[in-house]
Length: 159
Image 1 (cartoon, rainbow, N blue to C red):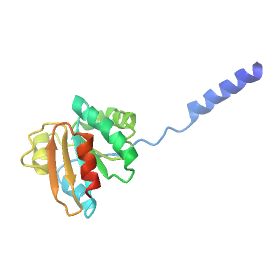
Image 2: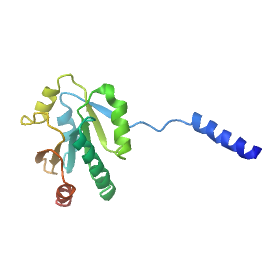
Image 3: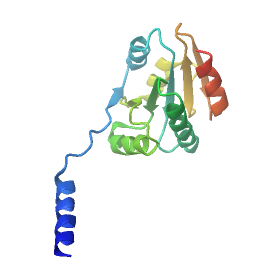
Image 4: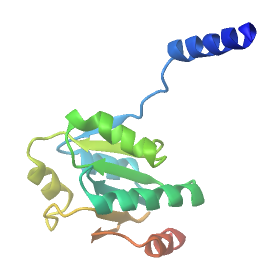
């Protein structure tokens, strides 16, 4: 019994001093960031999803993206939170909850969110979720509102 208590205590001590898992990098999304990420993915199809911690439909979509990234491990997914840099811990925790810590992640880092949205798309007025399907030829299709998994899969399979 003493040995069992000792081993349990030792295990807890090791866990307490073990280094924390590396946090997901969440890049600051500011002027020029959208063009930067489009350029970085040039020639490859990818999805850009704009979401927020306070958006119920956004969390539904994160759940869908969790399923899709498991089914399609090569899916190139970029997630941009329209929240603030002060909420990075919550954003990171939410992405981890949905097993999306390997997706490229950004957070709005400009106090003028309207300017950022306008730079992404002059016809986007801030409704969430907002998703862009970008083809290998750099053609973009924008959708506001909750996506259906079958529609996303149809796009993935057509690439």
